[in-house]
Amino acid sequence: MRRLMIALTTIVAAPFGAHAIEDADARLIASREVASSMQTRLKGELLQAITKGGPLAAIEVCQTRAPVIAEHVGNEAGVRVWRTALKLRNPANAPDEGARAVLDDFSTRLAAGEGADTLEHFERGTDGSARYMKAIVTQPPCETCHGPVLAEPVRKALAERYPADQATGFVAGDLRGAVVVDWPANEGAD
Image (cartoon, rainbow, N blue to C red; front, side, top):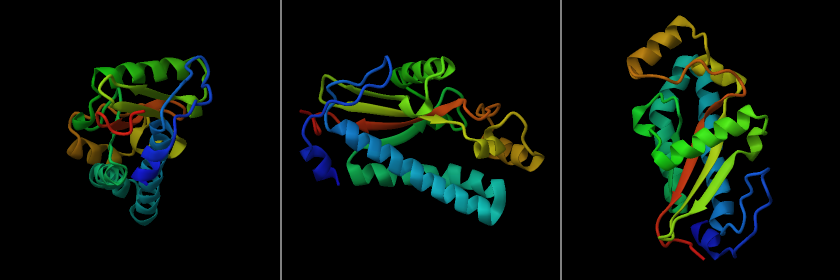
């Protein structure tokens, strides 16, 4: 898959509202696929865990499997894949300055009525690196562990696993965070 991504020619992406991603290189398409793959795999494992063991099993998947899934998907594509947010559950996922600025922009755009499907960002670094971010918007099932009201067993499990948890109080439609795809310097640059 990685060779295919690098072999793609330069594209011009379709505009996304006032925040058009223009003259993006082939890594934009590949990044979309990587982010989608990560989210699809995680969602599949979460749904399976919820079916078998309820929300407490989902917490286990998010804590232990999500980083493994991100690493696996990233290794397949030769990139770093991770999740970040403004309100963190896991401090290890704290956004750097650039990611924080994009998350703030996503939040503003979402609050202004922009559709969740358009909330993405792509930029190239001067060293040939690139970063792609795709918003994660809270869906109704997410409220079980991230919502404003949590069942006591969920609240207790989160407090035990994530003593500094800030990732609650969300309702469907809120910006939960973003998937980040970081391309290394001089990889796949035009």
